[in-house]
Image (cartoon, rainbow, N blue to C red; front, side):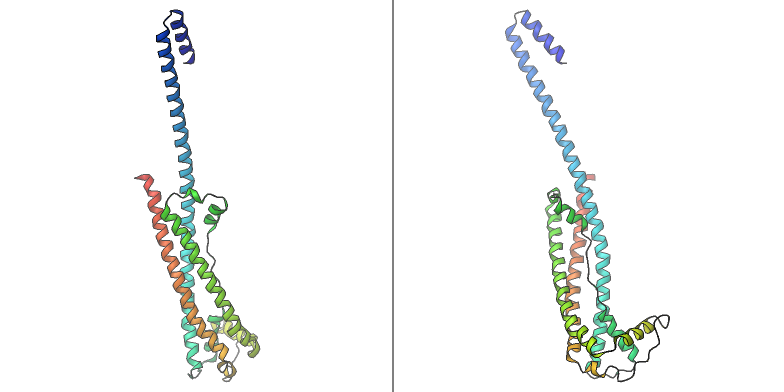
Length: 258
């Protein structure tokens, strides 16, 4: 094409048609500029498409992380609800209700002693932040929900730290000082497995006398009821946020097909 342009210019100059030459030259420049602009636009569109594909990839991975977290959080809410119920039943005996089955009472206590922390799956979000790619998320609603969920998770971890301190102070320390932990573990293993594991251990009627007279232990169960309710409410709110974010992600991804 450039050879054709060059030959045409040469012919025009050779014929002494200067005015037509300049008009032709200007037209040639315009065509070249238009060609460059079209090429730039195509490159820009390709870059935008690549960024969009990367964004959709991140959004899909975030959605997968959220689904994992929702399943785990619902398990934690159920487990902590069971612990609340167990602690409430144990507290009835601190208020004077007689223990008629020491093995069952012991098992109720272990439902509370055995607690775990929740750790969310947020590898995709961390990758976005650490790589500086958070700006790839173009939807402000999605970005804000991501940040809100991280803030809510921080609240949950703070409450877990608080509960750990209260549990160690009010439950574990008095238990270690007062009780025969080995005997209690043998009993609960045998009771929970219906005799399949552990060792049949008879806990005498007075086994928990000092235990029931210890104010710290009573406070520990009381705080379990209160703090697990707080944590469950916080976690339920995080589940709600996660559901909202999944919906927002689906809408954003589906927008490409509309």
